[in-house]
Image (cartoon, rainbow, N blue to C red; front, top):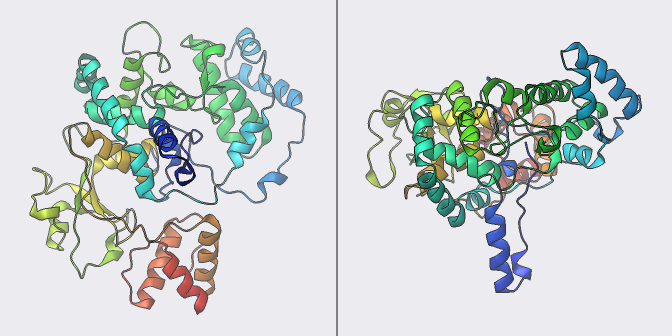
Length: 440
């Protein structure tokens, strides 16, 4: 994913006026990169943006076996064999050099992650909502044409636009070729980086952009909706008809390309992304698993109801839904449908998909959450998550590798431990569970 441009500001240490200025500035910046990956989401098609950085064993010990110049000479042969013209390659690589800041960003693994409620506060800021509403009106004709062609509603497209680049304002300022060359050279994920670099050269060869203007994130995500090069090649479109697929300078091309991607990811025209629900007291929380799907009608038979006695959206009774608990059983609950899953294929993070979905509703005055967040229980740090996994496995709950990633194996182990304690088995890692395992 693109590098995080949002950070938690130390507002308690600032005077009130400075706090206001900083909070507004933070709210304007894209928040897509702050989302935590959802490990059990569908895989195909390829993600529109860069997949999350995963831990590697002793990543700082990885050393290239050749100089950057030697690597570049070898890669030039690969590129030419793939059909890249020699003069195009030489122009694209004219000022390319190893960028250590890209490697630092690629290997960074934050110790602490933002709670989902803080992430949503930034993603759904009033400033972003107002700006999105203005742009929906400004681009009404273009958005209507995109809706007609691809079947993706305009609110969702503008929401992705806002989340990925603050409506084009923050697209990244690094040379995509330079960043990808650095990543391909240093060797941690050479297959991914090589494929993206070849794709980036193909884009240049097609004439859609020049090397000097092909700018993006440290990881090679590009344009107003942050496509990686391979996704650009398969899904970018020239919607404004100027002969170029310009996701950098043309909002029409960027939005239509995003719509094309979401359509291919299973977006269902006219359906909601999902909706908030309330759970019965005796609910079996082991069902809160992304792999378990039931019709909305079946969930209702299990006692799942709408907040405040409301009715489920019309026509959703027979749609396939999964139960999402972003903060465990103590927090808000949602039934998520196909369009939520399509957003997950764009960015495999439940908090990101929830933010996009709620923001799209905020543009029309909705998107408010009835449930309360468990703000007394902050997320575990990466070190604590690794300790939790180690303790679970030591107690014969197989949590897999102690890598700090709460994936399917770890959630299954957590549920087993929760059941042994007689707790709701929602699979959500908490300080209470960690402390209980420590004391055993």
